[in-house]
Structure formats: structure tokens, C-alpha cells
Image 1 (tube, one colour):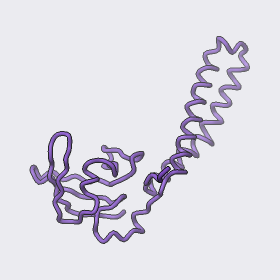
Image 2 (spheres, rainbow, N blue to C red; image 1 turned 135 degrees about the horizontal axis):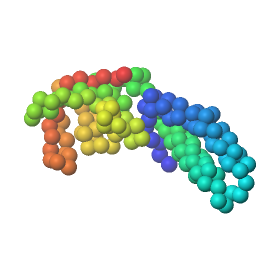
Image 3 (tube, rainbow, N blue to C red; image 1 turned 90 degrees about the vertical axis):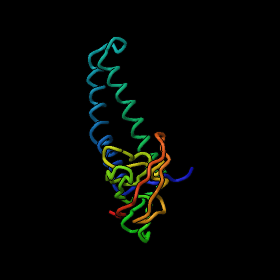
Image 4 (cartoon, rainbow, N blue to C red; image 1 turned 180 degrees about the horizontal axis):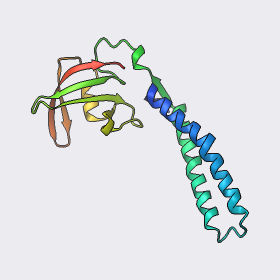
Amino acid sequence: MSKTPLTVRGAEKLKAELLRLKSEDRPRIIAAIAEARSHGDLKENAEYHAAREQQGFIEGRIQEIESKLANAQIIDVTTLNPNGKVVFGATVDLVDVDNDNEVTYQLVGDDEADIKAGMISINSPIARALVGKEEGEEVVVKAPGGEKVYEILQVRYV
């Protein structure tokens, strides 16, 4: 299996969630199951079934995070020397050539992408168009709504 790129911030966020699931949520669910068991007949015990369902969800999420971290290639963009080029992890300030709207995006892994936070997947059409380009260059993005032209105002590695 190939490695999946992940920023340092994304990896730390996953590690924090994993720690919370293992140290807080898992013990809480185990206690809830024990409490529900003490009420007697498990066949008709809704509390028990709900707790078991929640336990399954938590255990699944723990496995998913552990798998993501095991298969991640954690990239610290601050240690790279890309010479002003857009690379994974870079933060890019763009201006839409048609309407002068400015946007800022950070290129991140698929699991970290959050358009509302300005974080786009490295596999998105705009990110693929930006990779390898430099400040001052114009890029044409082939989007579902048609072609968009952006000018790269600034590339930062934070």
C-alpha cells in the first residue's frame, strides 16, 4: 500500500483524537456496558444495545485512525526547500482573474481537506493545477463549472 501524504498538523489532530478515544471514550463506554448489564435481561435492555453499538463505532474509529497513521507519510512543509514552488502543504494566495476575488488555500491530504477552513485536497483539480507553479504565474483550473483562471499572488510554507 502506498503512503498517504499528511501534514504535521493533520497527524497531530488524528493522534489527539486517538488519545481521546482510547483514554476517555472507550473507558466511558465500558462502564456504560457494565452498568447496563447490571440491570438484568440483556435481550430487552435498550441501554445495553445502545452502548454496544457505540462501542463498535469507537473501536472502528480507533482502527481507522491507527491505519491512517500507519500508512501516512507525514510531511513538514517548513523543512522543505521548494524554491517558491507550490508543493504539498504549501499555503497559496490566489486571485481569480475574471472577478478579482482573492482566496487562500492550503494543499493537504484527502483526510484533512476542509474547504470552509481553506484546506483543499492535493488531489482536487485546483491543487493539481497549482503544484509546481510559482508566484506570479497564472493557472487554468478545469472545474466542473468550466475553466477558471487564477494568478498566484503568494506561496507560503507554514
